[in-house]
Image (tube, rainbow, N blue to C red; front, side, top):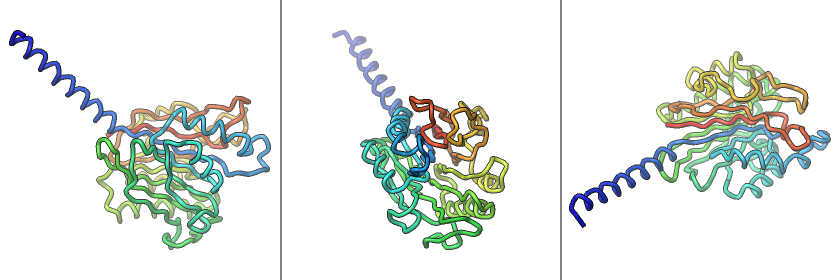
Length: 285
């Protein structure tokens, strides 16, 4: 083979390897996330009862296939159902009533083909976060689940928090935000990749959101304020209602946003899969 042909073949091979390797790195440095209040299993919901909508809710999540999913309001049977029907995922989290399986979870599911979990913890949103407790003017126990994850391909690390704030107490919501920010500082994560998600039960101009913005970025603002889908995330289970109140959020630190969406997909009967819309955000480093 002539020398120039040998050189050209070698150069082409090296170029292919370089491009392939760098494509993997670029792909590995993205992470897609979803926060979704799935509505607890309540027989009084009638046509919107969990047993009527659970299959289509799973179909929705699998269609978008986020790398990380933070759910709220999941009872143990719901958490187990999701775990059993999404084989590529595992989860971290506990029930808020006993720190085991009783009460609602703020579980974090993660794609085990992409991510490993290094550390996990659940703390209560109160003055005694390490104990089962009700905080401030909250109506009940509220929790935040934290996980330290690593991308298997790139070794990129993510510190992910998932919370469900109280729906009654404004002081509890504000102090819950302060507590999570304090946890981030205690763990010395300010320079790390942070993702905070959850049903925060408050509007964008509330004091709790203001507290988060002191140290974190609202993903919708990183996306330039361009929300694909309705402005709001709560639908009241009313098929005629256009969601106009944003109470579900994803915040981040040291990441940029390539996709931001409030997913308003319906069931086949035109009802909603839950009384909240999932928020879907794709981040990149």
